[in-house]
Image 1: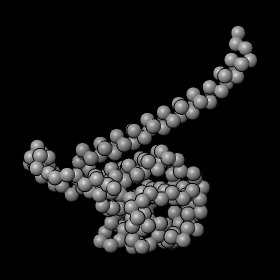
Image 2 (image 1 turned 135 degrees about the vertical axis):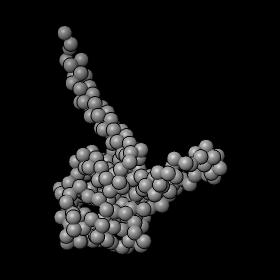
Image 3 (image 1 turned 120 degrees about the vertical axis):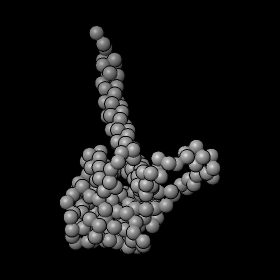
Length: 211
């Protein structure tokens, strides 16, 4: 029979084991998310279908109330995908790069996390037609393609929410994956089939890396 000291040691180890189990499960969920998005890159799907699929998976992973994807259009950003019904705003809602938290993320090409009262941030812009105007928590990452910002992906919670390092890392990586999808979407299937991939690799110069 274990003495008091041994029982105390066992009790202390149980929470640590459970915490490790939770962290492992979260890591596995994160890996599955990245794998699913990567599979979109090899399927014949419309870009709108890909974006909606990415949005749905981000919502599932973060348990957020809203996920919006904005893409660059000349000198502004256009809302192109959402997990909530925005039929009157998809493709029509626009903001300049000097407007709102989303514009700031695009300009600064930096992740932005606000755990509560995002609407009180001096950079915040109210649209009126979006219910997200009143949401508390805001997490946003730039969409990067070939080392350039081509959009922004936002995650929002109605109630205050402390964003985890895992959530921040996921959204940053998803932004990079969406950027890759956008690059591939501009290539015609015939171009991919006829390309001499060995020649393309051997003749190419250094790949530009994100600073």
